[in-house]
Length: 230
Image 1 (cartoon, rainbow, N blue to C red):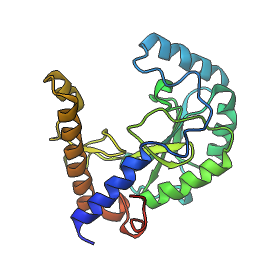
Image 2 (cartoon, rainbow, N blue to C red):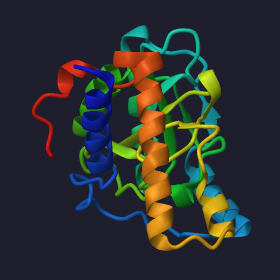
Image 3 (cartoon, rainbow, N blue to C red):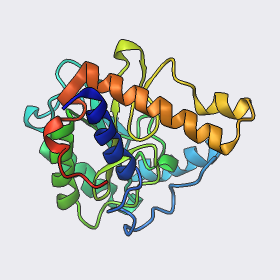
Image 4 (cartoon, helix red, strand yellow):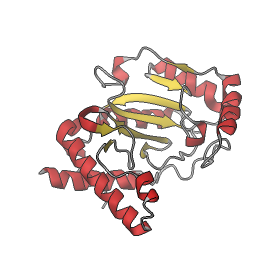
């Protein structure tokens, strides 16, 4: 399969997954999902969580739970939105299974980033996401960040890298090329909604194609691109 075809199929999958189809019926976390919430409100929300479980970052991981190689910041990472009454149980599960993860530590509750897990390849992330979703049934809340893609019910994430000139954040679960036009820039130029949508779609396509070129199956494997929804 040529690179252009792989890019089109991967983008179709990721854009559909950004709608979080399986997660829409999950319970909403009352302390997340507030667009534009101020710093003081976020600090107050985090204080509620920290009274239950102090924030932390895991320094060691079970190698069976990740395949990110020399850096956890190169590959797929996922986020879990969890209500405050469930954070102890979720924390105990993640620690017990040896996931390389953090609780809060820079993740905003407003964005549903209560727990962040570093997994590595797409295949590994998808497999572990299914395990996490099943194991934590009833304890995961609805994701709120639609820049990230659903890998399993209640588990959303993105491919993060800063290699080869990529910015680690973007839409549809992608790291974006640093040369891509950003949404803040487009808004500053008073671009129309149609112009913004067109520019962002082109940026996603260019970024996805370059990610496949550099990282291949680690980013998005060809073997799962057959039979995906159109």
